[in-house]
Image (tube, rainbow, N blue to C red; front, side, top):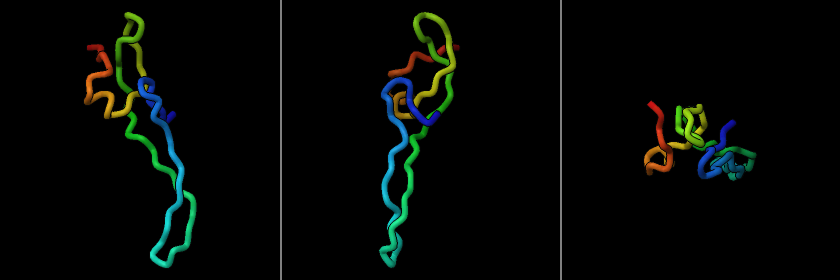
Length: 62
């Protein structure tokens, strides 16, 4: 679910390192919102990251 329909940004993985340098897995999730947008000429609910919303890549439906 955490994937942008426009740029394809999705969950990324890495390591969490504590002060004592113990390592454990962690994830970074994109800031994805469910918005109403125009897709192929009709309004549809899609998931879009906030960067795509802010930059104007998403044609919002009213």
